[in-house]
Amino acid sequence: MFDIPIGLTSKRIRAAEKLRYEYCNNLYRRYRQSQGIMDNGLPTPENSATEASETEEGSQKKRKRLRRRWKTIMGESYSDCDSDDDDLEELIQTGDDDVEHKEEDQERIFFKRYHKPQHTFENWQTDASKRAPIRRNKISFSKLNRIQKRSKNNMEKSFAFASHKNKVFFNSISQGLEYIDPELGDTETFNIKHIRLLTNLLQLHVSRHNWTLAYKCFALLIRIPKVDIRNLWGIGDRILAEREPVKSLEFLEWMNSVYSSRMKFSEDINYQRPPVFTKGSRDHVPKYTVTFLWISLISCTREMEESGGNDNLNEGDALLDLIERISELILSPPFMEDSEIWFIYALCHMIKADKLSSQFNQNLVGSARDIASNQVFQHIQNSKTFLQTCASKGDFHFPKRYIERQLESFEKRIQQLDIIQSNTDQDDIYHSEDFDYHISHYEDSSSDGLESSS
Image (cartoon, rainbow, N blue to C red; front, side):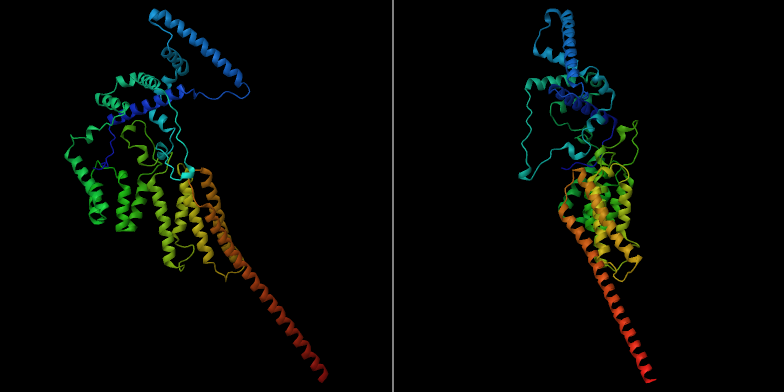
């Protein structure tokens, strides 16, 4: 019923994935060439017209030379039809690009166009005002067949060394069919059946909110050697959050520390590694890390509300620990490029500024008061800076005006306290001056009375 959480990382599956990536890259390159989109670079702005004319003349000369050579070899069987012209264009445009692409890693070439996993899917726009018409770049059926045929012809060398199962897999996916892996098919072992049964029971108990039995199924699943916990961390975190929220946070922290995105990548054992989007990589942040940061921020704010401001502002503050943790994360990729991490970082400083401004001690004077107020303004400025960094990434939307109004209210709160303090100081000075005046006047009057009596 449900997909079983097994990481299929055998060498045969890795070879089949390489065939799929190579075929997708060939289709992408052939289609761009058929649309006249070249990836060889742009001409210089000074000599763009000259370089374009030289390129056209060179391609025409090469086309004539190839046509004469084909006529001498094929004789009467050669004809000047459209397909032959397309083949000539194919040879002229590609050159030795096929050899270069085959020497590179096809998976890396494919994922260079998609830096994040969500970019590989369609972007469905729910807002009617932001909907755009579908880009309908139509091509003829014969042109599509030629593109597919040439893409398969470029894979003759890779296809010759493939196994029978990989050939069946490639023929199935190239025709748009769905291929069921033999390891997950009918010929399954008792271990696979046991995993499948536990997975179905786990999903069933979660849908019924039976968290006790769901926790037992989850605990049994993660102890099976073939099960990859990175395929179950989402539902496992939900179960732990319903049972014990503290263990849920500890579980996410353990996932973040064990399955780090800073692990080195070894080429010789590449086929033994799970898919790159199951965990973090150099291009995107793992989802369990983002979830851990969000839950940590929520738990910090909840503790602050429950404490009621009776705790110390600096000692043993969980929010400061979270700020230090995020400051270490954003020093290296992929965290420094993720806009959501910067937004969480800005919210941490915003909440800290709110806490310091609301619990500001009005009895502080002198340098101690200046240091306390500077801390509030420093957190406000950091929040504004990190929000600008998040907005510059362009892929994360947040209520900017609402947050700016909140930060302005924190600034006004401190400024009003300073105004009140300055007014009280002026009143004290005025009263002290008035008191000194009365004392001096009393001393003068008393001295005059003594002189008159004498």
